[in-house]
Length: 446
Image (cartoon, rainbow, N blue to C red):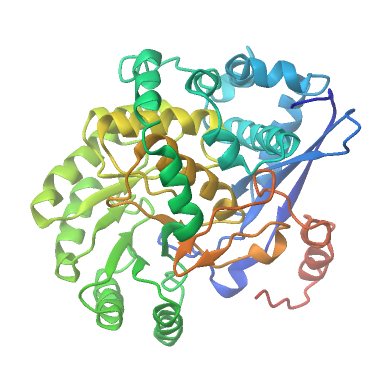
């Protein structure tokens, strides 16, 4: 059971210089340094457990999120854990509805990223105190307790609490069997690690060959900077993976609406399952127009990693603007808001394929997609979770991939805890690695 009063909240700026190897490079982010605002909360409970949470960033700007975490900490320190989880909806609203801080949101931008980091830490601590991995904590909750964690404000025109309750109750049938299935076989994944935009042809071939050997059958390719280069790279990947394996495209918001339609039409010969983030993540009607235009080609639209909140997802669903919904464990307000989006996706019958391209995102989002299958969707049709093979060695409980599937974590918590040596080494700017980089030394990050 939950216990203790929160006595301290600390946040640090942890950055990995992934730009040195072009890892994570895409059409809009050519030189990302995978980073995190990393939160640690402590309580006065005698168990000595701590909660760890993070929100993913790309380097510069992480310091802004750290400031936002510190600003929100007044709503967290001195709070009783039992008081939080017994009325989690209220606690969530306290963080997102601060009368002054919400002005620089509301529920978007740096302040919402900070909210996610804090709440991820709270969920991690709750799961640890219950002695369960986060996905299992959620699976074992009864429908009413789950709903008490969700703020339905602004989405009741698309999903009422009563409808959400009915979805959860109906999903109880076969729940035990689905959990056993996940424990045995895991959740299907796809890889983005082979085809970052900054990789050479030789690197693409080497990584793709290895991925195929390791059993991967679903591959995502970054596109959007140069059409002829995209055609070349898509042809290269398609020839390597063959006609039966799945190919997806990701433009990372590069195009205008008309440009997206024309560009993807010229890539249709490679039979992509979807085009991800073809235009601005805020352009609901633009996504709807692209979806309508590409449907005859059998190409769906996927988006969500930069959707600010549940309201944007609500409108994307209402406008039939996406075919694949990509939740993010750090862009949205942690588990609480993701629960709302998962339930809306179920109502609108849109498959969820989470975003996990970033430091720690695979570790976190695996819990959400396992819960979704076991307790909400009950389906694996057109569903898969992104996997990126970077930086897992810095986590105390890294993801386990077997036969291109996420295997359910067994350690208690949200898998958010980093190794102390890693946070110390990569803390910006005083960590060992950054001291060397800022003084002109070369660093090679594997």
